[in-house]
Length: 582
Image 1 (cartoon, helix red, strand yellow):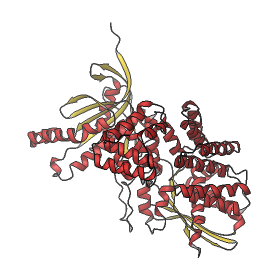
Image 2: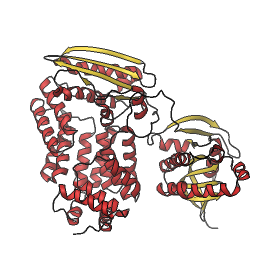
Image 3: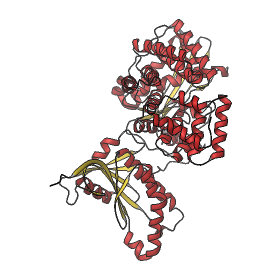
Image 4: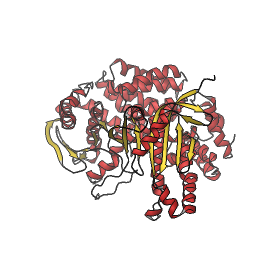
């Protein structure tokens, strides 16, 4: 007797709500509507997330996926697209689906699948509300922390013909009813709240007479972000998204909605002579209520103690004594204000992400280390700056300096993960991906919510052919930094391209604010070539040549850090389709 083939999959069961009623009212119209939704929404989404339709029965669908994350994203995005496509129809003619998602072992029989996993998915679908998605515990355990959704615990559900109860969760994707904001903020859709206490630290207002002191107030806010991010009990929005609101008068309720956080920190800094006044307040975003506020008048030499105090007070207000204790205080206790001042100026320059500003950042960080030679933070950021310069200049000497600085930061106990990430990237550039993985795994342990670490690791996975991991990191970055349009969408544009998702890739290319990266323009040209948009592709290639005169496909190939030759050829294929050749 032949042994049955078994495999582990995620199974999505979907069913039309009130299908018999719709058919009774308009049989031909209902069939056409379902076929249209299949052709224009459902089937393309299944293909996008690498699913396989294994069963249909009139109004129901059964789909298998290799990844629970892909299955969940497919379900949520499909529901959203169906709702949007039916907006203009009378309510009685709209077609709504329930969806249930489970994962586990199935038996393969020809083109379809059987087993308890399939049966539980079908039962979970019955628990779902119209337009909703309900998942089982097996899926929840695989997707938590990896997707930008929250989950409502529905508890144990007794299900017909299923031995034992099934723990179910409803996927929370609805808009929340908040007051209309007074100031509009351009962003993606409002985001759900994560499980952890969540906070965004807005740029502190510079109240000093000198506008050139902005770097100082920005540095105070950035230090708070860094320190709070070290707590495993907090979800902290990354700097680049928080700082979108710099210089704006915004409604904290809207900030909370757009960034998907429960709390917002605001503050101001007034620096005059040898004195500084810092004010900080913690606000519950949905209500505008002040949870905590304080003002600090200090001598500048007390600045580090003030920052520690402010950080600890915010952590206590958010998660109590445990959360405060979890903030690992590994930052060097620098006593020289001029060293700290140089450090802040260095970060301010690096964040502008141009070659000229990065050079300036290197000089400020070297000045910091001249005064505080054992600052692991300064060594780690100097390594990052040198590595960035090596990209701008294609300079191997910069990579050597980056490695020296990163190893010194690690030796001094850098706890941010940044130095390990830079070391990993440097090994990745040399195509020593096994060593690179050892370092990026360490980097993720230290800085699992550090956006700079995630960006580096995302690229190493991209170069090494670990595209699923690169995509997962890109999606995590998008949640940590929802308003960031540079690092996040640059990475996602490249990942989606190599996954063959050219429309998604182009969307990320359009969102990415690329002003000066020559290979970025070359990659955009390849994406446009794959989509048959030849004239736009040639224009993008022209932008590449503006920044890198004489650049050829041979240069592109020689400078590509990809482990797999097929990934390099994939990019070259797109360029050739656009008519670009040597």
